[in-house]
Length: 271
Ligand code: KMH
Ligand code: ZN
Image 1 (cartoon, protein in one colour):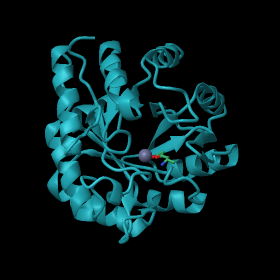
Image 2 (cartoon, rainbow, N blue to C red):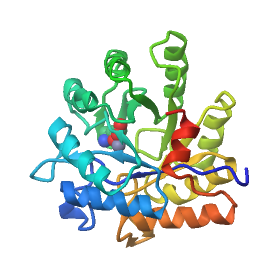
Image 3 (cartoon, rainbow, N blue to C red):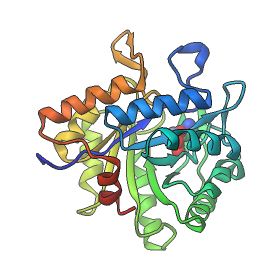
Protein backbone atom coordinates (compact mmCIF):
# COMPACT_ATOMS: atom_id res chain seq x y z
CA UNK A 1 0.00 0.00 0.00
CA UNK A 2 3.00 2.26 0.36
CA UNK A 3 3.02 5.21 -2.06
CA UNK A 4 -0.70 4.98 -2.80
CA UNK A 5 -2.01 8.55 -2.46
CA UNK A 6 -4.34 9.05 0.47
CA UNK A 7 -7.55 11.03 -0.02
CA UNK A 8 -8.36 12.93 3.15
CA UNK A 9 -11.93 14.17 3.54
CA UNK A 10 -12.57 16.79 6.17
CA UNK A 11 -16.11 16.99 7.53
CA UNK A 12 -15.73 20.46 9.00
CA UNK A 13 -19.14 20.64 10.69
CA UNK A 14 -22.09 18.29 10.92
CA UNK A 15 -25.65 18.77 12.03
CA UNK A 16 -25.42 17.54 15.60
CA UNK A 17 -22.86 19.51 17.64
CA UNK A 18 -23.78 23.11 18.40
CA UNK A 19 -21.50 26.13 18.76
CA UNK A 20 -22.75 26.64 22.33
CA UNK A 21 -21.29 23.23 23.18
CA UNK A 22 -18.00 23.61 21.32
CA UNK A 23 -16.52 27.04 20.71
CA UNK A 24 -14.16 25.99 17.89
CA UNK A 25 -17.00 24.73 15.69
CA UNK A 26 -17.15 26.70 12.43
CA UNK A 27 -20.73 27.76 11.67
CA UNK A 28 -20.88 31.09 9.82
CA UNK A 29 -20.06 31.15 6.08
CA UNK A 30 -16.75 32.89 6.80
CA UNK A 31 -15.83 30.44 9.54
CA UNK A 32 -16.74 27.48 7.32
CA UNK A 33 -14.71 28.80 4.39
CA UNK A 34 -11.70 29.56 6.55
CA UNK A 35 -11.90 26.16 8.30
CA UNK A 36 -12.12 24.43 4.90
CA UNK A 37 -9.12 26.41 3.66
CA UNK A 38 -7.04 25.50 6.72
CA UNK A 39 -8.03 21.83 6.33
CA UNK A 40 -7.04 21.87 2.65
CA UNK A 41 -3.69 23.45 3.49
CA UNK A 42 -3.16 20.63 6.01
CA UNK A 43 -3.89 17.95 3.38
CA UNK A 44 -7.64 17.54 2.89
CA UNK A 45 -8.71 17.13 -0.72
CA UNK A 46 -12.46 16.71 -0.11
CA UNK A 47 -14.58 19.01 2.03
CA UNK A 48 -17.77 17.30 3.21
CA UNK A 49 -20.14 20.20 3.71
CA UNK A 50 -23.07 20.91 6.00
CA UNK A 51 -24.10 24.50 6.62
CA UNK A 52 -25.83 26.42 9.41
CA UNK A 53 -28.39 29.21 9.28
CA UNK A 54 -28.12 32.65 10.87
CA UNK A 55 -29.00 31.12 14.25
CA UNK A 56 -26.33 28.43 14.00
CA UNK A 57 -28.92 25.72 13.34
CA UNK A 58 -28.32 22.99 10.72
CA UNK A 59 -29.85 23.94 7.38
CA UNK A 60 -30.13 22.60 3.83
CA UNK A 61 -30.89 26.05 2.40
CA UNK A 62 -29.53 26.37 -1.11
CA UNK A 63 -28.55 30.03 -0.71
CA UNK A 64 -26.32 29.25 2.27
CA UNK A 65 -24.64 26.33 0.45
CA UNK A 66 -24.06 28.69 -2.48
CA UNK A 67 -22.53 31.41 -0.31
CA UNK A 68 -20.24 29.00 1.52
CA UNK A 69 -19.19 27.23 -1.69
CA UNK A 70 -18.26 30.54 -3.32
CA UNK A 71 -16.27 31.59 -0.28
CA UNK A 72 -14.38 28.28 -0.19
CA UNK A 73 -13.63 28.48 -3.90
CA UNK A 74 -12.18 31.96 -3.48
CA UNK A 75 -9.63 30.51 -1.08
CA UNK A 76 -8.86 27.03 -2.44
CA UNK A 77 -10.06 24.34 -4.81
CA UNK A 78 -11.02 21.15 -2.94
CA UNK A 79 -13.58 18.63 -4.11
CA UNK A 80 -16.77 19.90 -2.49
CA UNK A 81 -19.17 17.25 -1.29
CA UNK A 82 -22.62 18.35 -0.09
CA UNK A 83 -24.48 16.48 2.60
CA UNK A 84 -27.91 15.26 1.59
CA UNK A 85 -28.32 13.69 5.02
CA UNK A 86 -28.87 17.06 6.65
CA UNK A 87 -30.06 16.73 10.23
CA UNK A 88 -32.22 13.93 11.55
CA UNK A 89 -35.80 14.74 10.54
CA UNK A 90 -35.02 17.07 7.62
CA UNK A 91 -37.67 16.50 4.91
CA UNK A 92 -36.33 14.90 1.74
CA UNK A 93 -37.08 17.90 -0.51
CA UNK A 94 -35.00 20.10 1.76
CA UNK A 95 -32.23 17.52 1.84
CA UNK A 96 -32.06 17.68 -1.97
CA UNK A 97 -32.34 21.48 -2.24
CA UNK A 98 -28.63 22.31 -2.66
CA UNK A 99 -28.04 19.65 -5.34
CA UNK A 100 -29.08 21.99 -8.16
CA UNK A 101 -25.86 23.90 -7.42
CA UNK A 102 -24.14 20.86 -8.91
CA UNK A 103 -21.39 20.22 -6.37
CA UNK A 104 -18.61 17.77 -7.29
CA UNK A 105 -20.04 15.14 -4.97
CA UNK A 106 -22.98 14.53 -2.62
CA UNK A 107 -23.74 11.93 0.00
CA UNK A 108 -26.37 9.22 -0.38
CA UNK A 109 -27.22 7.37 2.83
CA UNK A 110 -28.16 3.76 2.21
CA UNK A 111 -30.72 2.99 4.90
CA UNK A 112 -32.81 3.96 7.90
CA UNK A 113 -31.23 3.60 11.32
CA UNK A 114 -31.44 4.62 14.92
CA UNK A 115 -29.19 7.65 15.27
CA UNK A 116 -28.56 8.04 18.97
CA UNK A 117 -32.00 8.51 20.46
CA UNK A 118 -33.49 9.56 17.10
CA UNK A 119 -34.21 7.92 13.77
CA UNK A 120 -32.32 8.85 10.59
CA UNK A 121 -34.86 8.02 7.95
CA UNK A 122 -33.72 6.71 4.57
CA UNK A 123 -36.50 4.52 3.23
CA UNK A 124 -36.09 3.05 -0.24
CA UNK A 125 -38.28 5.86 -1.60
CA UNK A 126 -36.05 8.47 0.03
CA UNK A 127 -32.89 6.81 -1.30
CA UNK A 128 -34.39 6.68 -4.80
CA UNK A 129 -35.51 10.31 -4.68
CA UNK A 130 -32.08 11.57 -3.53
CA UNK A 131 -30.30 9.31 -6.01
CA UNK A 132 -32.48 10.66 -8.84
CA UNK A 133 -31.71 14.25 -7.89
CA UNK A 134 -28.01 13.43 -7.66
CA UNK A 135 -28.05 11.87 -11.12
CA UNK A 136 -30.20 14.63 -12.64
CA UNK A 137 -27.57 17.14 -11.57
CA UNK A 138 -24.63 15.06 -12.73
CA UNK A 139 -23.13 14.81 -9.27
CA UNK A 140 -20.96 11.92 -8.08
CA UNK A 141 -22.53 10.17 -5.08
CA UNK A 142 -20.67 8.97 -2.05
CA UNK A 143 -22.65 6.08 -0.59
CA UNK A 144 -22.82 6.41 3.19
CA UNK A 145 -22.77 2.99 4.83
CA UNK A 146 -23.58 3.13 8.53
CA UNK A 147 -24.29 -0.58 8.98
CA UNK A 148 -23.80 -3.97 7.30
CA UNK A 149 -27.23 -4.19 5.69
CA UNK A 150 -26.70 -0.86 3.99
CA UNK A 151 -23.93 -2.40 1.92
CA UNK A 152 -26.41 -5.06 0.77
CA UNK A 153 -28.89 -2.33 -0.12
CA UNK A 154 -26.16 -0.57 -2.10
CA UNK A 155 -25.34 -3.76 -4.03
CA UNK A 156 -29.04 -4.42 -4.66
CA UNK A 157 -29.62 -0.87 -5.90
CA UNK A 158 -26.52 -0.99 -8.09
CA UNK A 159 -27.88 -4.04 -9.79
CA UNK A 160 -31.05 -2.13 -10.66
CA UNK A 161 -29.10 0.86 -12.00
CA UNK A 162 -30.57 3.13 -9.34
CA UNK A 163 -27.09 4.36 -8.54
CA UNK A 164 -24.73 5.71 -11.24
CA UNK A 165 -21.74 3.61 -12.30
CA UNK A 166 -19.23 5.95 -10.73
CA UNK A 167 -19.49 6.40 -7.00
CA UNK A 168 -17.34 6.51 -3.92
CA UNK A 169 -18.12 4.70 -0.69
CA UNK A 170 -17.84 5.87 2.91
CA UNK A 171 -18.13 3.62 5.96
CA UNK A 172 -19.33 5.70 8.89
CA UNK A 173 -18.71 3.56 11.95
CA UNK A 174 -19.46 4.22 15.59
CA UNK A 175 -22.81 6.02 15.39
CA UNK A 176 -24.93 4.66 18.27
CA UNK A 177 -27.53 2.69 16.31
CA UNK A 178 -25.21 1.71 13.45
CA UNK A 179 -22.22 -0.63 13.16
CA UNK A 180 -19.72 0.06 15.94
CA UNK A 181 -16.24 1.45 15.55
CA UNK A 182 -14.45 -1.88 16.08
CA UNK A 183 -11.80 -2.24 13.36
CA UNK A 184 -13.07 -5.76 12.64
CA UNK A 185 -16.28 -4.19 11.30
CA UNK A 186 -14.25 -2.14 8.85
CA UNK A 187 -12.21 -5.14 7.71
CA UNK A 188 -15.36 -7.17 7.15
CA UNK A 189 -17.07 -4.40 5.16
CA UNK A 190 -14.04 -3.71 2.99
CA UNK A 191 -13.63 -7.42 2.37
CA UNK A 192 -16.99 -7.42 0.58
CA UNK A 193 -16.11 -4.66 -1.89
CA UNK A 194 -15.23 -5.35 -5.48
CA UNK A 195 -11.60 -4.75 -6.32
CA UNK A 196 -10.90 -1.15 -7.37
CA UNK A 197 -13.87 0.23 -5.44
CA UNK A 198 -12.64 3.41 -3.76
CA UNK A 199 -13.59 3.79 -0.11
CA UNK A 200 -13.15 6.00 2.92
CA UNK A 201 -13.72 5.41 6.61
CA UNK A 202 -15.19 7.88 9.08
CA UNK A 203 -15.06 6.92 12.75
CA UNK A 204 -17.19 8.64 15.33
CA UNK A 205 -15.57 10.09 18.47
CA UNK A 206 -12.79 7.94 19.93
CA UNK A 207 -13.04 5.58 16.95
CA UNK A 208 -11.78 8.20 14.50
CA UNK A 209 -8.07 7.75 15.15
CA UNK A 210 -7.87 3.91 15.20
CA UNK A 211 -10.19 3.45 12.22
CA UNK A 212 -8.46 6.03 10.06
CA UNK A 213 -5.03 4.64 10.95
CA UNK A 214 -6.14 1.11 10.05
CA UNK A 215 -7.63 2.41 6.78
CA UNK A 216 -4.27 3.92 5.88
CA UNK A 217 -2.63 0.52 6.45
CA UNK A 218 -5.36 -1.18 4.39
CA UNK A 219 -4.95 1.14 1.42
CA UNK A 220 -8.23 2.99 1.93
CA UNK A 221 -8.97 6.65 2.47
CA UNK A 222 -9.96 8.62 5.54
CA UNK A 223 -12.39 11.21 6.84
CA UNK A 224 -11.66 13.35 9.87
CA UNK A 225 -13.19 16.56 11.18
CA UNK A 226 -15.54 18.00 13.74
CA UNK A 227 -18.68 16.40 12.29
CA UNK A 228 -17.44 13.03 13.56
CA UNK A 229 -15.04 13.89 16.36
CA UNK A 230 -14.03 16.99 18.27
CA UNK A 231 -11.31 15.38 20.42
CA UNK A 232 -7.58 15.33 19.85
CA UNK A 233 -6.94 13.15 22.89
CA UNK A 234 -9.30 11.77 25.50
CA UNK A 235 -10.66 14.76 27.40
CA UNK A 236 -8.80 17.27 25.19
CA UNK A 237 -10.69 18.87 22.34
CA UNK A 238 -9.00 19.76 19.06
CA UNK A 239 -8.60 23.45 18.31
CA UNK A 240 -9.34 23.22 14.61
CA UNK A 241 -10.30 20.84 11.85
CA UNK A 242 -6.83 21.39 10.41
CA UNK A 243 -5.27 19.93 13.55
CA UNK A 244 -7.11 16.64 12.94
CA UNK A 245 -6.12 16.67 9.26
CA UNK A 246 -2.49 17.40 10.13
CA UNK A 247 -2.37 14.46 12.52
CA UNK A 248 -3.71 11.93 10.02
CA UNK A 249 -1.47 13.31 7.25
CA UNK A 250 1.51 12.85 9.58
CA UNK A 251 0.51 9.26 10.33
CA UNK A 252 0.08 8.61 6.60
CA UNK A 253 3.63 9.84 6.12
CA UNK A 254 4.88 7.13 8.46
CA UNK A 255 3.15 4.57 6.24
CA UNK A 256 4.73 6.21 3.16
CA UNK A 257 1.33 7.16 1.84
CA UNK A 258 1.53 10.61 0.27
CA UNK A 259 -1.45 12.87 0.77
CA UNK A 260 -3.43 13.29 -2.46
CA UNK A 261 -3.86 16.79 -3.81
CA UNK A 262 -7.36 17.74 -4.91
CA UNK A 263 -6.37 17.18 -8.54
CA UNK A 264 -4.99 13.73 -7.70
CA UNK A 265 -8.13 12.92 -5.74
CA UNK A 266 -10.27 13.99 -8.72
CA UNK A 267 -8.29 11.64 -10.92
CA UNK A 268 -8.47 8.73 -8.50
CA UNK A 269 -12.24 9.11 -8.07
CA UNK A 270 -12.86 9.67 -11.77
CA UNK A 271 -14.38 13.11 -11.34
N1 KMH B 1 -26.49 14.33 10.24
C1 KMH B 1 -26.78 12.95 10.02
C2 KMH B 1 -28.15 12.64 10.48
C3 KMH B 1 -24.67 13.02 5.53
O1 KMH B 1 -23.98 14.01 5.71
O2 KMH B 1 -25.09 12.71 4.44
C4 KMH B 1 -26.62 12.53 8.61
C5 KMH B 1 -25.37 12.89 7.94
C6 KMH B 1 -25.08 12.15 6.69
O3 KMH B 1 -24.64 13.76 8.35
ZN1 ZN C 1 -22.44 14.74 7.11
